[in-house]
Length: 449
Image (tube, rainbow, N blue to C red):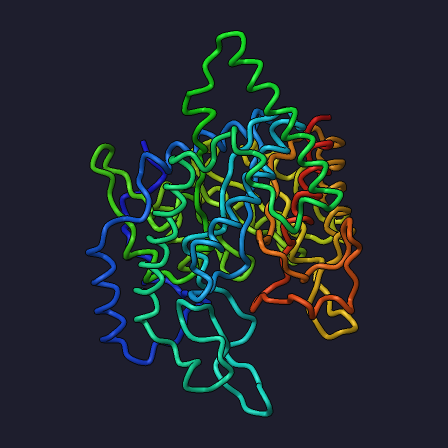
């Protein structure tokens, strides 16, 4: 028995109200693009999706830990081998820190290979006194602040598919071709990080790991095995543009079940989780692991009803709740949400997104986040779960492997005046590689408890 009902099909969402969709000006062109994507190969496979769900089921009980991270919104222009490699590098480094120092297997999921769409609070925005359509991610329109550039173009979805395929191809090559081998832990440390406090801490850990591997070889235990030479790495993005998601939804030939093969894991945001909306209708029928962002404006009864609709069989690994309450709000909202889930007996992966609700505008005018606020929310997340007797199962970051200056604080004590040096995001501010490593060391102390 599966989670879908006989009334669901991959197009049934079209009978419901779909929010956050671009206003495509040429419906015929849109239909042609969707038809083209529908005929293309899947980006990921049902077997991979099922494997991720099994791993996430372990995180429900505390037998694994979810690390999810990557760009807030991917850009077509940044789909390059160096950028993909640097993002993978920092996630591999964080995973090694969490596994080795935290003593727990880490499930690695990137916000990558498909995070090309973004929700907006308004359909339009005013730029230089002119009202133009809002930027909805490179899969819809251009960031260029001109009315013509902001007209949604469905051909961009096709380009998004091909760039996602290219990204996945490179990720698979890196993770299975030796780049992710534990023997290479030193090679993952980037030049601009090496001489930092966090870089030196990472090098000490890498030395310990190398010594352990050498010892295994010395006593005759082979390290030439997939567990040490390869890495499991999965992809995720927000399931936002439903035409695109439908086009990549396929029926598994071995089970007859339906999977959205645009990514291994999908999540639904605060703006699109209406229980009678199109996004919930679509996602209830695909068997991918699903994340659900929950911010301060949530209604607990709605959350419970949505979970019942998305996971009626209460399957562990199916649902990850990604809370985003902010350092100042988490103590107010998280305990009552935990208690409601416990009362109903829902099996969920409790994940903390400490980024979104800690955003503010610096005196320089840049949108930023303070490292201390991010860490404070994380610590409170762990402490509340310990107090409630539940499992803090994962973290969700917006980060990059590049040397950006977008979040203040951290070991180097980045300040407002430095934000303009390398402020490269077109969306939300991200942790850089050094800040990400520092965060991983802090989390490892918590999960080792």
